[in-house]
Image (tube, rainbow, N blue to C red):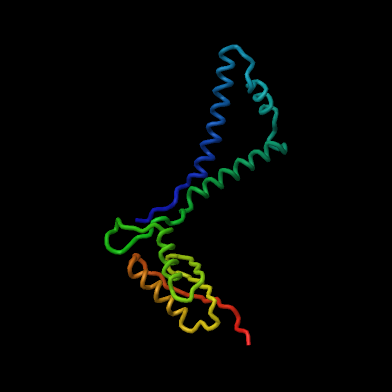
Length: 175
């Protein structure tokens, strides 16, 4: 189970642009059928497009903009999204939410005696823990945090167990 984020923003933007173009075309067609002056005059648009040359600046800029937007949308659709469900050992359909996984590991690090604040970044291969403490002597604190995080990893049991690295930040000793 490797669920990834959806590409809702590019899809929403594309759908919104297409909807606006369709509404504009439908309104112009209905106005024309009912005998009213249309907002979008087909003859004026056709004449402008017919007289435009590919070597002119405006068509080149519009074509470049459409190509860049198309490439950006294609890039957003092809790249995989961020993993939202992390696979666990055992049943192949079991998984843990990535946000909850990170919060559980951060809580394990923060529960260690002497830790004021714990920051955590998770990856598939490595978990980096940055700990802030008020202690001036940090002997054994990094090992205690590593043990707490590894114990929580044992409890969660991810399919691929990441390595744990701990950095402790303490105030400077004044003498």
